Length: 342
Image (tube, rainbow, N blue to C red; front, side):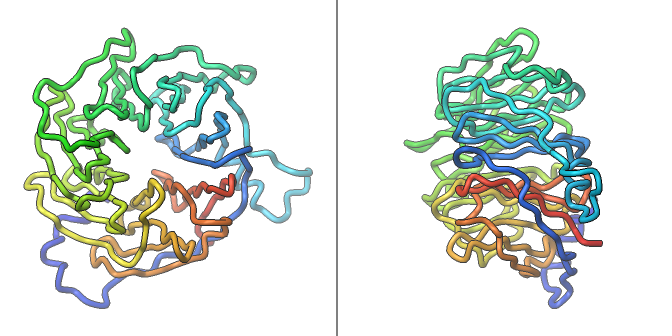
């Protein structure tokens, strides 16, 4: 729903106009042997993958998850995990799916990006590996599938050609704080831009073709880390989250702060703030209460807060791109699926 924010300035004064976020049911799907650190849906919403501190990756098929959630599954237990990959030697930080092919990539603390072909039922290991120079904290495929970005402990995102593995770095680097390690990097929907959320508290916008920095929003989250950043589908806004317990919506063209979503505390974990599939709502975590908080994206009013059902606050939340469903991952090692009850 790309028109949502077009009337955002006119809608700022509206009160009590928030929509209702439909009730969701949740189900424990699986458990890693250690902390479940990250999750990612495939672009078509048919699969979701989770990565863990136990160095494993689990791949789930959404149709099997839904089958499992039906109480009258007569044919015995349904197993939604269709692949488990073991090829890293240190915890996994992030995952992404190739936009066209049955390929999943993972970035890990062992300085590698690994490529897994999930069309092969017996494959447990990566078929390609990029050896980076740093801890790979975040990965993002270009929408063409020909390039990928790696956000690492280095201050500049590493841009890789998927076919040659050649690495490119930006030539015009803005002033970056002492700890400019990148917590998250994400392409826009067309690949024309990418955004980085850094440990120095900044959000930076980059040209997807030249890799030049277009805009630095320094201190986007004060002196606290910026932990996540993602574009709206129309590429006009960026939603960011930080360890200052704020979630902010920025206008890409001007760098102006448009909205702030308050009332959730997150100071410890690498917290995410995400849109739902229609971009009508923003979803994140309140660490002290161990709750999932939902805001109306337009009015910034809080519309729901639900117990996370994790033992301890979730580390990661990821929404399906195509339907009212999301994943939460926890320090309690568990993976939970949430879907609306309509």
